[in-house]
Length: 178
Image (tube, rainbow, N blue to C red; front, side, top):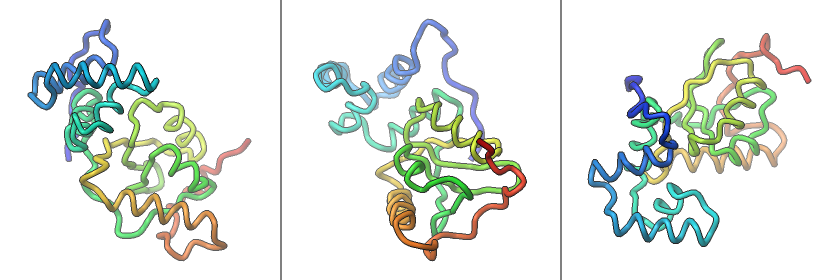
């Protein structure tokens, strides 16, 4: 995986508009499908990119690839065999935010991000861990392991102990102080 330069720096375009433009130019989205998605998004109050994906008008792979191109992120393609625990970070938070920890060392945390526009969750995770985040676009449908990790993290938050989690990354020196 390589870090990419973000596609299109046109400041007047929103990230969603740049994403739709990417999909249209790539042929991943047709104009009639876009109009159907806009109608659904407007009626449901859901974001256009998510509505298009839920309707199956944009594949999971195109969803991830589009966000990767727009933001200059790689697409997550390697998931740990077992979920990675993070000290002092409730698994419920990770699951709710659609964040899947992939790798961690003393200074950085690489994670698959289900919603690239959720900058609040990314900032909160960085503040909580004291680590620099290396985000990657999550391809929901092509990485069933990510969903299994989320399920395992959720289950582990209910049980005492974390037998289904890898040892936590060592960030004790970066413990969040409230």
